[in-house]
Length: 85
Image (cartoon, rainbow, N blue to C red; front, side):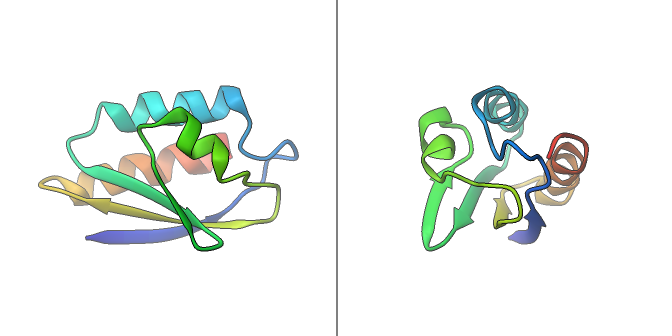
């Protein structure tokens, strides 16, 4: 299991367009990806679950990647976050 934290930089937070792109990216991976903020967790392949976290600018999200290719998949998700959030 690999985890990392990132801070939301986008002034709009984790809005629908970016959340949809995240779900699309994560759905192509072989590992299970979950997001956690403030005690709530969300399966990153489920748009409404991701949106329900209500991540705003400046808030920290913990990303957990677990699966057979977790090293590679974690790098993919980190890259996505750094370029989109």
